[in-house]
Image (cartoon, rainbow, N blue to C red; front, side):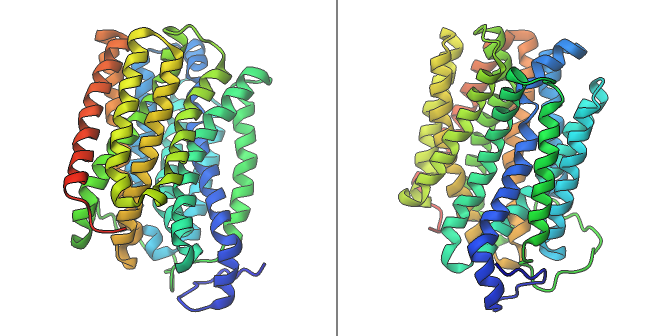
Length: 408
């Protein structure tokens, strides 16, 4: 395989051939490894609670610190890869991911726990826009649909593999709070090498220009697609936030299941279902997949609510599978519509703006659950959450069905 660490422009055939054969799958692997690091602590929160001693609200606050860092990175540097190139931003994300793992390895209390989640959020924020754009651009025009699935599958698959890996290692291997992050550091090293070998897809990248934060910026021609797509993403990511922040506590305290591998598998199931849902989006078509995905997401939320009422693990898993499938359908459709409508000169920034809304969904509702749990208990807070997100998903799906966005 031939790689050139220069801008591909639009017409270098050698670089395009290399990128098409290996480039976008390798970029997807980098994306997945980076995102896996962001969910590694999910099954471990109970162990941290025992070791450090903090409330359920603090669990959601620790989780929210990650999401706030993601949003900050997207707002400050969401469009930076459009100027400096995809590879430097991906390498910076790997550095943040490695620093996060080191914080968890050295963890001795809440400060380093917060620092680890903060750095992890910065990594995810840089990856969300730059890695998605890199995967799609490395594929070339004829493989864009396949690459779009690779990007979203790497995002969700990576997020799902994180808790599965840490749950298995924490339950069945020594050093439950250390080994996971040692393994992740090794994976980050592999991802860094892959990133270094990838071709650059940005024409004439600038050499470390100053950051120019522009907030959430969406080109006028994209707004008609952006609004319903981002609202659907908000609802879907809210479900993911519930599973990654609160579901482990519910499994342990309400269902009396204390096997960390099972906890990791439950969280993994929602991301696995999301990846399956994404694989169906192209067959359904993005315009139809958006409202259909919202409808399936509503079914999943109702099953989650039923599991809270009946205290049945099987219903929680079914809720994860239905909810994840709906989220995957809607998410890939939304991302395809938004990235397809965005002009090339601002694609990275537009995708980053999309992820700002999505990560607001993964953080704000979950903190609300943690706060309400202090008053209503975990079950009552979960039911309120399920009801509110159901309304948001139903509204987004209805709007997308009545006024289909222009696009695929």
